[in-house]
Length: 440
Image (cartoon, rainbow, N blue to C red; front, side, top):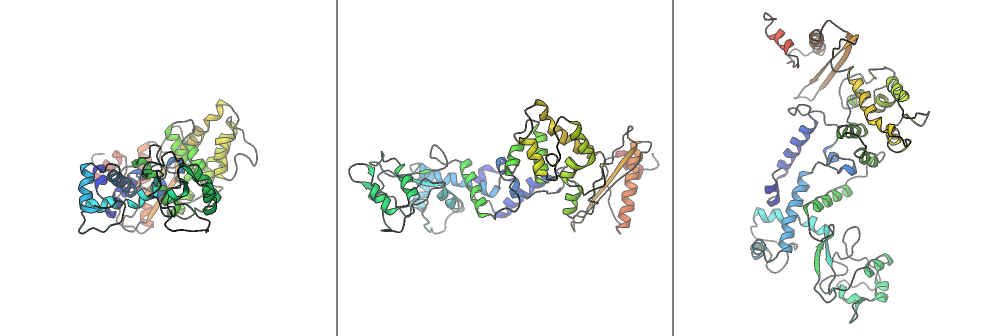
């Protein structure tokens, strides 16, 4: 990412969208050259791993967090040349957080002050003398996020200052006055604020770091929290604990990611492909007895049931496996006996999936009685998606299977009324046979 530019200027919305799109397409594409199937919304992938995502950055929010760093420098280092130049031009008698209108401001200044809302969300005023802090207007209460005090409606004075809540000459809080003005929860919070700095000037700090100084990481995390609070309440079960635990399973990172894909539905089973508008048979291609959902494939299909029954993993009716994917995975995560052999379940899930794929990808094996064929068609203009898979009696060679797959794909395209089609294959011999039959 253009880190230096993003630290100085607000990138236009069109640019951030193109950057996000490039990363998203690369992630979902199997070749890096096509768009691929986007199984999950990009904003969900950008959540932290502990919150169910993969930790990709929301570029617009990251841009804001970087700009907030510059805004913090203006406040934290007022004597630097950087601060003195901007102060002399835009905020001579105030602070950079005050919304003062400027005549013909530069794009750099407009970019920096666009981070004001983020900085204000995490800014806390540290109590010293309390003279400059408004009780009802400034963020000085250290709650989950800095905020003004909440009154109980009695003796409300709009210009009350924190210094007036202290007992003169003793550097302690005036408890009777606090009980008179505030809710009991705020009284206990205020009593926990030390008054040892009562003789010093008030100061500002960043609430979300131990040092009280702003960092880009804490600013970005805060921006993500704000977006989560503003978004709608999710519908369905909350599986974030399951998703977070997927990255703690003792196995390779590849298998951890596959378990995450299983839980989020990012697996190309028949039912999922059909739900995404692809014209495929949703029935399980291994047993043909039920729709091919992720849970059916991994836990309910007869071959999968046989794998679990023969493994050391204990099985019991109505307990494991069940008709719920999340219940099954939760059982594997947290309800297995204390035995080293129980840790093999990630590999069992993976090889059940790989065994299913052997029925789909057009493979030819000398040890198998049947070969598999498959084709995929995507119209870039209309977005139409078509997919075909089948298996037949194994031929004499892999080349025969490739040729039969091409012929079958041509027949399917003709049945769909498609007269002009460009076919692609990974078999160089088939390409040579079609382009130069006399050589073959």
